[in-house]
Length: 538
Figure 1 (tube, rainbow, N blue to C red):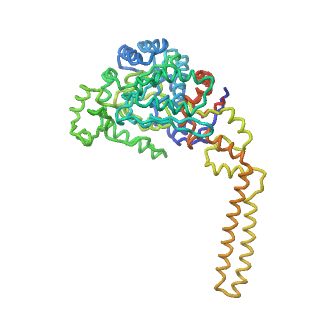
Figure 2: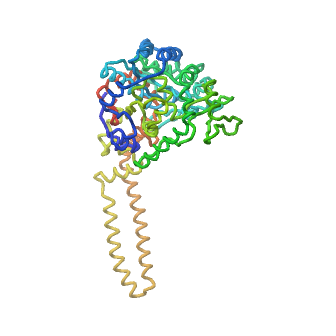
Figure 3: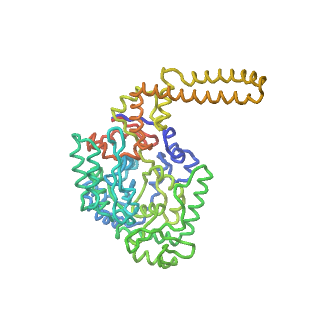
């Protein structure tokens, strides 16, 4: 496996993310610990404090992980959390069926790699943790995956009944057979297919919930590295961390003002806020089990279209009494996460880095400090069938993010074929010159027909454009093989017009290259940092 670095600046990432990975001061000013700074990391580790009872954390995590058949190393890492010196590298993601797109794996591998690296550098235990987004209620976002099927992209998706509940509360019995059938029809059978299906079928059993299936799969793939799983849709974990929820009520105005101020500063620095701001950062679980937004007008907390109304003290008491009826939003979830875990570093995707920038200073209202925010590995797999034809075309990987029509025209323009632009440009130039000359002659004969003579040349130009288009089409047909290669590469690198890592399910590659593919990738990434995109040659 060969890996080459490719600059983010040539790829479709936000300016904020590009600047962050290039460590530009304009964006680093929104973070307490700079990425890739060894000195900042050592300072963070030295000054780190953690107020939550570690024994309780370890006990709860053992129970939480028990439903995922944890490895011995995972259980050992949970016990390490009892040690006051132990720190964690955390990442997390939505629990997309069958594991989701490639970036889920890239996040996990980054966390595992950093935990090992930081443990060596700091001389203290550091464990990798994956935070399951078990309180997310957008069931549609986790219900489908994309696969390569020949040279096209095939989508396999299912529908759950009664959308609106937290995704971890759905079982797979109503959808898993449909999904399995679609995937099996979409991918070819290989020497590795049976190993993959052993993992999938034992994890994604019809009797399992969405979170249990996702966690079982992660343990089967990464348990050997001691990966700990956790989440917040758990009554015991909520009881331990409910002070985060109550503090978000007590400090609501201050938190909103800080978020608003940071967002304005981001915009002034030339960036955009990732998340729309709201006075409330809480959701409520209603009697149907649906996760609904808690609103706040500065005086009263309420649920739209219901009789639920609280003043701040009443809401704090309600949270204290029934914490699992309440759920954090995107700003509050990281704080709750770091209340439960001794987080040294959080491995984030581009969007997460943007909302962490909005959160600068919010941790202060919870007597916590923001961890290091480390970009996840970003990568594109280059299969041998694609690599072979790269050399036959004059484009870089970044070029394939253009429209297919533009790529085809660019190819024609760069070949030894006749230069149609020059041919027709000269032709039109001569006609222009001749038209000017003849318009004068016609004007002398009959001034009223002078403009008509100009229109005649416009009509001629229109016909020339049609002819040029037909010639381009003829050249494209002559270069049909090359056009097919361009399409194949573009579809592989930018499926659905998006980066491969955001679109294609990682199980596609496990089926084709073996279930130990990501173990090999972790070894290959050993001396790489996540400050550039990786081209990974399989």
